[in-house]
Image 1 (cartoon, each protein chain N blue to C red):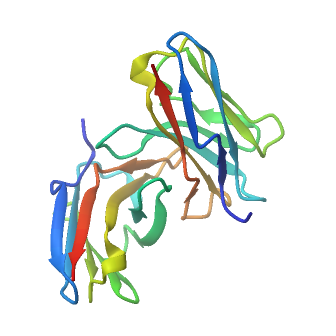
Image 2 (image 1 turned 180 degrees about the vertical axis):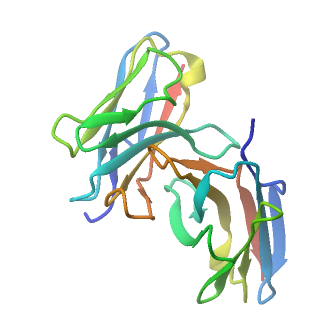
Length: 113
Length: 114
């Protein structure tokens, strides 16, 4: 069972416009949600996170929104830049035990000049 | 370096052989995780160490997989009798401690079993 889902395998956005990446989850036992960015041959790099008690967190060009009733979160990047082209993973942290991260399948974002 | 370091970057091995993958976490980080990423998928949890002990090994797929962290720093993931299905990128991540939210990942070891 896929507890965290990213239903869009890829997204293409024009430079300067807004990129919106989406993520859905099914488990209510998550206390934090994180977004990671991954370039080829590199490990995932932390981008931004949000606590389950918040509905928005902003860091520069990146904003994450959390809708708990819909079990949905999204990452907004504005304005999008060519360097943002990468695979983005949504991850949810389990409250109990190891606090392990459960990842979505990833969305490949391509920013076109 | 200041980040999580994994060696080797790439490993090609024959089916049935034994392999060891090494992870050097960020200094001072007590929490260490191993994840496995197959092509087109997100990373999947394998095992978690808090200090020297494996606090949660529920993600290990079978008893061919084992991991140690004898001194609470470096960790080694060991795979016996490798199978072609073990081919994946193995990622290590460390976190400062139980109250820290952010996990830092290494670049991964790409294991190919031929």
